[in-house]
Length: 157
Image (cartoon, helix red, strand yellow):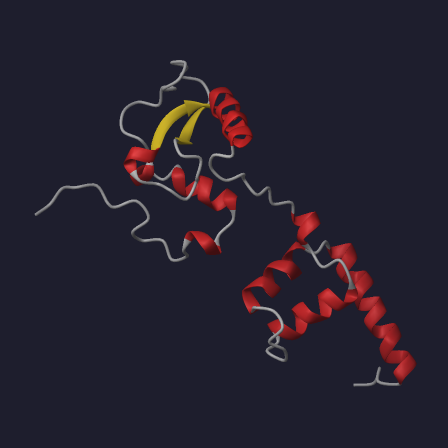
């Protein structure tokens, strides 16, 4: 019987191309993906605000040789240097306010795709767009839709 630690990511349902950067950071903090040893910054020796650092700059590379402990300060400073040198991948910051539907057309494409009435958008992308659209904007879209339906005479059930 083997007592080896579980392989990093062995039980995750979604692949890295299907998750957000925030989810990748959470995965990197999973016990089976953490670097060995106590959480001490490999660059300055700090024990405050220590997190997983990806040596090659790619958060989806969770191999043991690519992760080390780093304090937040060193991680940010190294990230800036790596970005200037074109090493690694910039983190995509997810701001739900910016990812929601921007127009009635986008909204309708997402809704129809989610309902299975259109193949113009992947249903998972449609769900994310709808979830990311602020409630006030959803209400605006609903008012626009009813206004169009009233003009066409299709506002009756």
